Each structure stands twice: as C-alpha cells, then as structure tokens.
Length: 106
Image (cartoon, rainbow, N blue to C red; front, side, top):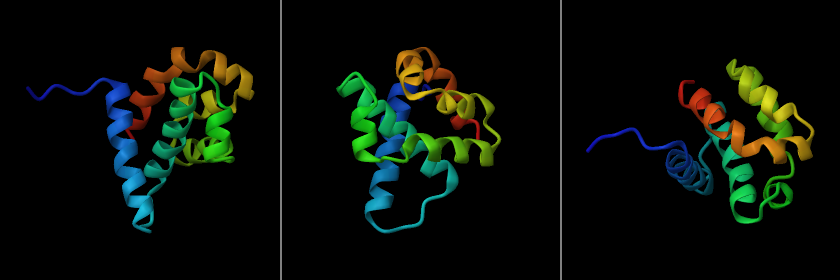
C-alpha cells in the first residue's frame, strides 16, 4: 500500500535521510536544513518533553528554522519557530502537523 506516511513517520524518515547526508559531509539544501531543525525539536519534545534537548543537539535550531522558513516562504513554520521557546514547547504538538505539511509542500 502506497499511502502517504503520517507526519511523525515522515519526519523520522526525512530526518534520518538528512542526518545520513549531513554525516557524509554533503551540503544540505535549505529544505533539508529546515527538516533537521524540526527533527531536532521533535526529538526533544517526544523524548524529553521539552526543547532543552533540542537546544543541546543544535543550539541554533529555533533561529535557523525561522530564517530558513522565511527563505522558503513558509509562514506558518516561521511563525511557529518565532514563538518564545516556552510557548513553542507548549504548543508544539498542536502545530506539528501543519508545520510538517507546509515543509512537505516546499
């Protein structure tokens, strides 16, 4: 069955591909860099319940996501990552699907 994966599965798969490419030393596109920022945030939220782990993995994940979303013309993603960190943390799961859908359409 060739269904489109749910956004959580999509992010895990896309994030894995980006991490593999990043580890090989290859240059990442803007979309791939944004996927990595969202993957880092998602990893922190799903595994630790906060964004502190995300900050440990990639201290610039939030500001980089804002710039990349702006560059790619993704207003909902940009607006999500411009939220103060505690607000983003509190609203992360309610915004997750829409952020992923916006990135997937880029």
